[in-house]
Image (cartoon, rainbow, N blue to C red; front, side, top):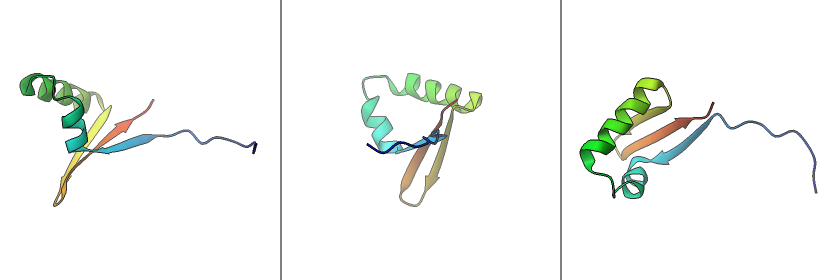
Length: 60
């Protein structure tokens, strides 16, 4: 086993469609409200591009 320093992960990225699939049991209006709250608090960044969107979660 190799020993060494572990670098802390600062962000995690997932496609927006995966987030939608994982949260499909939540009504769209509630899901949008939750996402909006996370964006306001700086916990989450959503970026949309030509091929869809990506969600960046910051880890504190």
